Amino acid sequence: MENNNKRTVRNRWIIGISILTGIALIHIFRVGQYLKGDLFTYYYSYASDIMIPFGFYFLLCINEYTMRFLRKWYVKALIIFGTTTIIEILQLIGVYILGVTFDIFDILMYAIGVMIAVLSDRLILKKFMPFWDFKS
Image 1 (tube, helix red, strand yellow):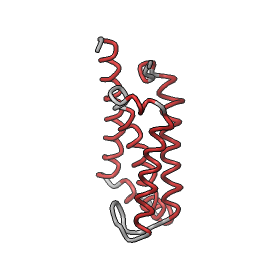
Image 2 (cartoon, rainbow, N blue to C red):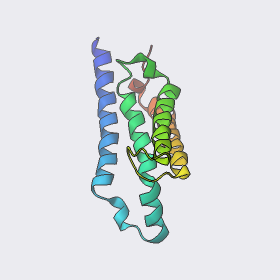
Image 3 (cartoon, rainbow, N blue to C red):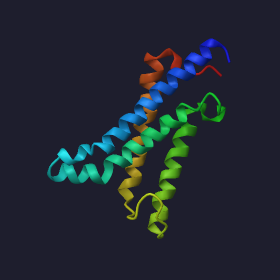
Image 4 (tube, rainbow, N blue to C red):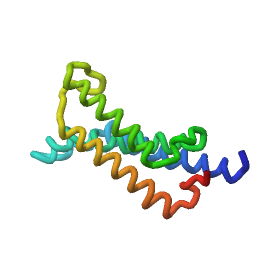
């Protein structure tokens, strides 16, 4: 691997791990506890359903160099949305993996989380950080 590729991989890891660390810190410090009323309820019902697919998308992004099939945004989006949706449907039939209550709105939140990740990837990171886009 040439120096430029090493730097690209390192920079992508730094950004990906920073995003994942931020999500972890939001959960560790229980940011939602400072909210009141309906906002509190919505936060604890759906915030993780948006943040977790967002984080997993970037977890896949930092592995694009070694797993070439992940270089297309829609492959990563499909993997994340498909996995989270299957897990939610399993809750409906009584198989509890990451939760115990089926909620159709959780699937909508997964889609929103993936869409925000894709937009962040393609419109922000790719545009403002030249190393972000691997050249195949």
